[in-house]
Picture 1 (cartoon, rainbow, N blue to C red):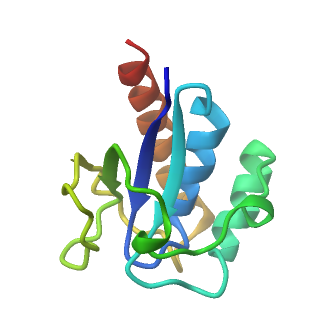
Picture 2 (picture 1 turned 135 degrees about the vertical axis):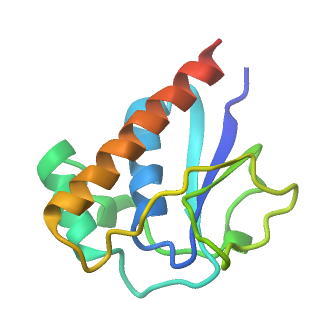
Length: 132
């Protein structure tokens, strides 16, 4: 059985979508392939996100991921918006889900951890759904 391609999309592809890609690979690489992208790119992944993901999961997002545009990833089977309000990039086929997550950029570690834990739960729910 071929893996479904799941794309996690937000505007800058530097924080929430990168966390979702990392956790998708961490938990569900046996079920689906994870990608992240945005309408704009940043020169580097959000450094607070990188630091906290290392602390919580031992994942170094900078070792395997970088900021990319929606046009730079394979066409997804499932496209998930992280919650980009009005500025979501166009994805051929539209979005299958909108997780409506607040962007923790510039906020406290506690806010980052809260969003990371929400993404963690959503990734595991998605894995369970796709495993059936």
